[in-house]
Image 1 (cartoon, rainbow, N blue to C red):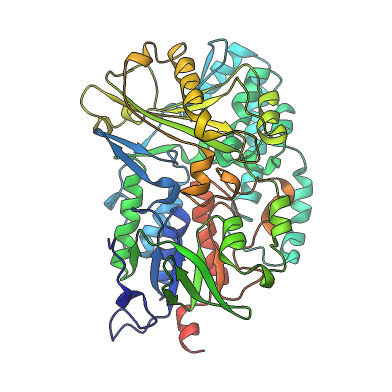
Image 2 (tube, rainbow, N blue to C red):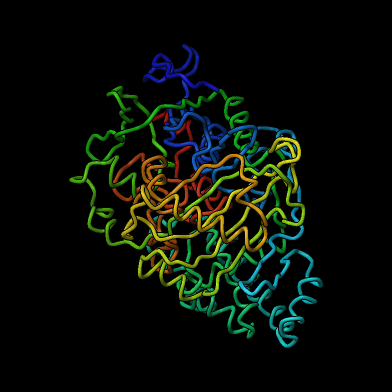
Length: 515
């Protein structure tokens, strides 16, 4: 991988005198940008990825500290067939580069009173646990899974790979969306089948993994339950960063390049047409097309001229609803906690009230729920011998909240440490040997995330499909968007699917060459 900027490769001229492929620039190397580069390379483009950070991955960046390896962001892999498809475009198989291991259970959910639920792909085990909470909900669970599958068939298989460039494309699907009561929230849908309040939390928390409030996000997102049950939940040996490394290998095998420490400060335009980008420092690079894997709101607000924007104006971007922010504490311990599974969810004393604080009131509460990641449960190589690697991720309000993270971050970290010490990690304060934190302020300043949101636009019904920034820009020709802020949305399957949409809307390289 090339970490140093080589202007002879980045200019308008081909990489070599014999390389006449049309040039595509991809801004950002998150999973959406990496998948886009693979697809563009397979369609005949010479691709240049420009990454602000010192290593690829975007939100899937990897921190290495004191012998511990921390995946910065995504840790849960579902729908691995989407990855297999990308590897097959390069004549390879995913297992050539990435060793995926199935998770069992998918998650252990721990309630505030200490009760637990091991949510897995084993339906019988799930039903046995459900009956311990409320026997009548066993049948409701089976009916809910059927409802989830129906929404998967429409929301994932039929809508997930469509471009939604025109309102007519949405209108065509309206009868199906109406039939599935897409106006209902995920929590409302779950509650129509499940009566026990504990089990309602188990079945409805999934939208939080993609930045959605279960009480307001469209019930279409209940498809996640079927997706997990059908294809499993996986983790990569070596951490999710090994998947990034695999992508880099694919991209370089196509004759494309990734340049790190290279921040794009402007997307250049002539009239409506995009012509390339300007880098920090003023260097201009020409391109036939530009694909932005940067946050969509950030792309329009900070990289494109306001006077040329018609749909995604500053006013519209400011009024949009954004996902929650994230506070992440990465830490390593001098001992191993063998009873803690790979993925845990620790729920606080409140559910709807806490989510209202985060998404509606924009206030930081004293109580919180968190996701605890212990990858050393599966891969001991991610920590020194006899140690554990962890991260605790807490949903918090984005930067519209009145929180001074520069002064409050350590106080909040201490609250997380105390909570973990009294629940699943006894004696934690004496066992932590390395530590770092990430706040919504870091998401804004380091990852160029508008308002420090963890997942860009909140996936409400009127911020989904046609209502999101389109994969093919509405305002500029030759500009395309991938990632969490465009269709179909956040999460590894979502952002990889956003790159798949490019096959619908990006001209084939031969058509560019013959223009």
